[in-house]
View 1: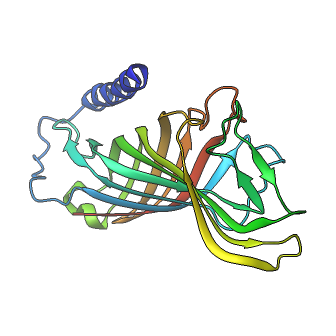
View 2: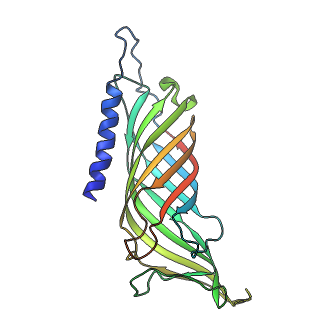
Length: 241
């Protein structure tokens, strides 16, 4: 975790140094940014994918990622188009599976994704993962005086620690997809997962609406317990205030 935090700190420090090195004209009129909107709140909804997923894992339905962050934004005095932002938030990933049992609570050395299409199975299974996360962004705004009507982009990293992981399976069926019993089974455990993660991110947009992408640089699962899966997400960001 210390290495991840140091790496994130290095990225933000490098961004600050780079922005302050941008030459500015001594005659340029000073821009007052005290009343501009700073995109403090960010809500993200995206499609969630798994890179390096083996064919033996059968996904089903639409997997989603949902994130909410509160960011503090600090414009550079020497270049008002640039700023650094950081702050806390909650990030959730919800990959979905079809006719698959995930042995999240089994006392085994590996995490099993068991295809149960030929026997009794749950119609839908969702793996829900939640992180306490802290993004660090380098931001660019084309028109800093009219932030809510300007072209903008941002790049950065997110440092996160897992706070919950569980499966939720609904509607038990037989091998012919006939309902046996309509109930929900929930199982929770974090033992197979890496507790910390580092993700790369970027977004581009206009005003308060952005397209974003993120890629988890660290593996989702611990070494040796499952494939070295690295989640990624593509979606939209809504910012404000």
